[in-house]
Image (cartoon, rainbow, N blue to C red; front, side, top):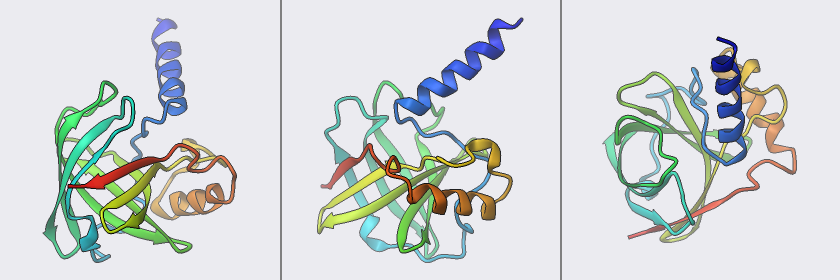
Length: 164
């Protein structure tokens, strides 16, 4: 019986070190309150060696949210659906994208920057101060991200996306 909890802890640690996002119970922003950035709309691909997602389409759901369809998955893709809903928010001048799979209640968080008309870089949001256990609300998550952004390790693994 002790092997299962140890295995679960090891699995979470391995996923954290290899850049797979960890689903959190709280969103980084307030879904439905912040307007979308139309520059995100389109089909995006990356050429990373084995990304969690290689190709996806982001479309407008309404003025405050996106529909995301995962078109091509990598070997580490762990969701049971290819359909997600997404939102954006800002923290200290940086823009973040967060998404929730249609069949679960966890949120996945990424920071992104546009590098040109058809290029975007993203990174998984790492909680480098209090970790996942410190996330007890959206406000607590935002504070953790703000502190983590100041650390050199934050966003050290970047994925570059190209819009088709």
